[in-house]
Every structure is written in structure tokens, then in C-alpha cells.
Picture 1 (cartoon, rainbow, N blue to C red):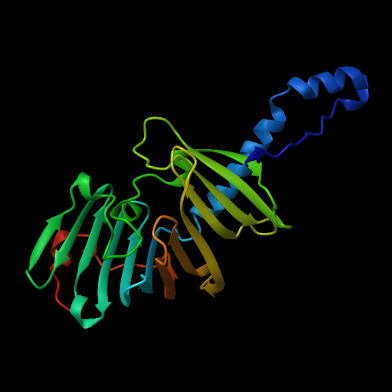
Picture 2: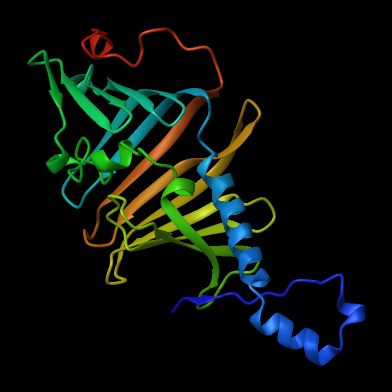
Length: 264
């Protein structure tokens, strides 16, 4: 069960207002709730910008685990702000050269075996990306958390000491499939611990767990992200950052359809 965390706000006029009047003021004052919403937004901003930069380049492994098979992909990932992403698979050899390009809310895949570029239609945005538990929609985030959701501090049953919890509710009118998302972060530095995704009926659909904090350049980030779908028993996708650089000068032409067809 989720409940809002209570709060109070110190008022500089306390010494000039009787306790009774001041208590009534607090009861009806919007400031405590505003303060909590502001704190929640600050926390989400920290999480939202954790992997975000003007530019980035990373070497990543993705372990795709099911009850019947398991495989590992190694890939290069480039990004530019929140608009552009380019992914090229390096290993295994069977999938080598497969590439994905995202420009704002549009997405294309390149299959080297057929030498074809395919634009992903809206009807396939919730389909699995390369057989993983990540969807095409996960890769095409036109909006950031900050732009897409309302936030509030909450408490949960059996909370952990030193952990803060935030509920993220989608703003109306945006094409977001989740009913709401809860986020858990360390109180000391707002480093994310997990995110839980619920449908509109409040059913838990999937959970993202953040692990193994390491330093890349001047950034500390969780380098292991485990995505666990709750409706597919035994399935899990583990994303592991092997190398990462942020705010670097990228080669021109990375985020182009022409680059999709580039052979390794």
C-alpha cells in the first residue's frame, strides 16, 4: 500500500502567531505538499540525468535470460542529448552489424544479412528489442521523466532505512503505457536502487534494479541494470556498462541513416 509521506515547513513568523492560529495555518497550507513535490522532482532530476549528457559513448553487454535459452550481446552505444541514440551490435557474430538508430521519436533498424533498413512503425513500439525484455519504446524516449510525470514523496510497507521513495504519475495526454512508477533512491546521494512499473490497475509489471556503482570520468553510475518482467517467470535482461565516456566530441554523421548501413 502506498501512502504519502507527511511533512512540515518551518515558518519565520512562528514567534508572532499564536500556536492555535499557526496550527490551523499549517493544516490548510499548501507549502508542505509543495515542498515534498519539489524534493521529489529534485530526486527524479538526479536519476533522470544520471546517464544523460550532451554526448556519450559506451561499450555495453546485454545478457538476455529466459527459461529455455540465454545469450549475450556486446554493443557500442552513442547518444546525443535526449534526441539521438545509435546502437551497433559487435558480438556475437550472428548478430554482428545489426544497428538501431533513434532520432527523436522515430526509429530504424538495419539488418546486414538482407542489407535492409526498416523503420519501426508505432504498432511495434511495445515489441521486444532483440529478444530482450527492453522494448523499442524503451529506446525511443521522446520525453524525460521530468517532462512526463507528476511526482510525490511516499512511504511503503516495510521501508528500508536510508531510502527515499517517489511515486511518478504520468501527465495526461502523453502516450505513456504505465499507470505509475515508483522509484527508490539512497537518501544520502539520490543514487537509484530500483524502479517498479505498474499498469493502470496497479499491477506490478516489471522491475528495474540498479547495482555496482563505478566511476567513469567524473560520474558515478550504477553499471549493472537488471530488468525483470513480472509476467514472464524466469525471464530477465541484464545491461552491463563495460566502458563509458560523457560529454565527448563525437564523429559527425553518427546519427544518420547512412551510418546504419556501415559495415564492420
